[in-house]
Image 1 (spheres, rainbow, N blue to C red):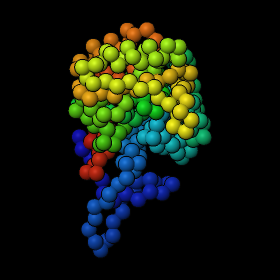
Image 2 (image 1 turned 135 degrees about the vertical axis):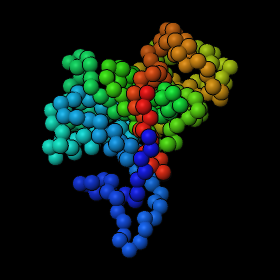
Image 3 (image 1 turned 135 degrees about the horizontal axis):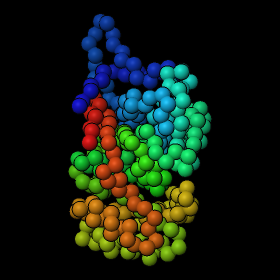
Image 4 (image 1 turned 90 degrees about the vertical axis):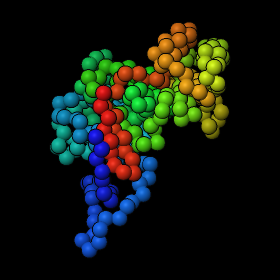
Length: 265
């Protein structure tokens, strides 16, 4: 389902308001990537109802959904919402937005999660975790009745790994070089290169909220059967979790220059 949108201008009260001059027709507008993300996020929040327990995603797209939920709570348009954040960053953002928070132990079944993705294939399989929160994201979003994914059109790929960007794997710190080599050897036919994620400013290893490292895998070719690949990765001792989210998304909202497309499982 595709939904077109005209020229949008932003404000605090209404971030996406159609505007048109009565004397002239609508002119095409070039939207930035962040504006497309915001449009997708606002569309996703339409799925939220009062009384829901929500999984709150992490990243540059999900932050718009968190902010919008907080805004609707302040306006009284949503009530009795409980959020379960997928990272310490989202926890802080949700607190500042005034969203009441809880955790997975208190709410083992959630109504809905909203989050972004780094890649989406034609079957709505995802790559997530380039922001470093893949383990908590997968735990929380796997416990949801519905999982709505919000992306801009640049995130759509023919196959996972097809963007040429990282497919993250969270690993324990001990023996990370050993695990990294095992991962690279596993996908040698796909031209895999495994790299430890580091902090740009210091070169020190990036640590997740769980005090683990991330090994990023870069592929030159399709890795084939994703479920087989998933199983092989998880069999390597020292791997905590990988960034392939298979058969988890129930809805993907894609914002592009021509409008919003909603894809359902």
